[in-house]
Image (tube, rainbow, N blue to C red; front, side, top):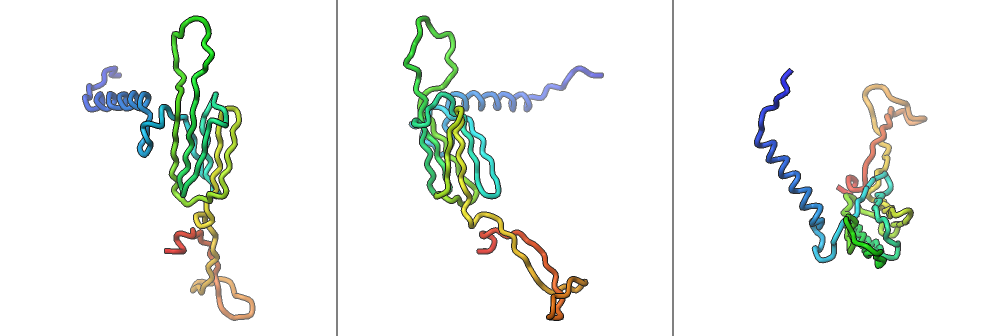
Length: 177
């Protein structure tokens, strides 16, 4: 059993780069496509997809719902707002301040067209949940195909032709192509 590992400078540089990226992301959380002047911090988010909708959950503890704005334009959802620093300061001094205050902005671009008339947002226990319905054109649809087969199949009633029904899912995008 050999307890030694071979020194690999490439691995060490990769670890250093990963740590530097993490450090910069923590201190400068602005993402591509966002205005650096509007975002001070970024709340954590989960984005899930179902057949009918996109579901976004954002952690916004300590922020009242009236300080949050949700907008949708085309297939882009934007959530912005502000967490204000507490005006209450107790006697004494702070030894640690880890919570982030100020403006935030998150933008989410969806892969498929969305139905902007059917977007719902709810806010409960510090979690903002936004349901964004997919546009009908982007939902998969089952199409039945009927045709002749050479290997058996079912006799259609009364017409003497052999048919075989297969189910194929085709999206509206594929139909248009």
